[in-house]
Length: 131
Image (cartoon, rainbow, N blue to C red; front, side):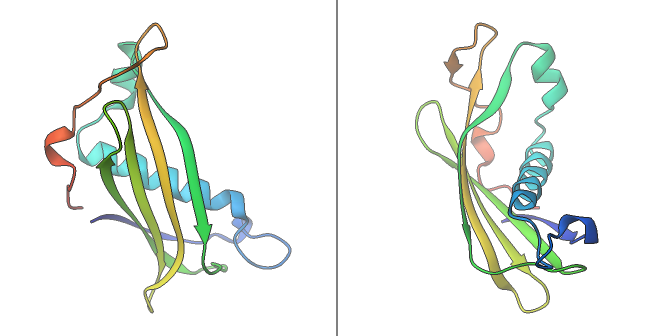
């Protein structure tokens, strides 16, 4: 399982003293980008070629709250969802107790220069890449 270690910054928290719910989406996106870079996917290069990698759905289940200065990992695994879609299966796990904070499933597709989904397989051979 690929994972990225992070730490909560004070400004990411709301008045209740916990990470604002929208910030979790940033954590998940950062980990997905790091994962894809690890697999050799260069967003700028694909965009210049007219290929746009996009999310079409994101489900996020909150299990616990992160607080200022908490350290945590964001784990990422990739699964083939259909001929055109990939699912990023993600978990946020707090240190040091390894408690589950959130779990997510984000569905992505690739659009060609005409804006139509197409089969995109630059990382197909390594859906279980380790980080």
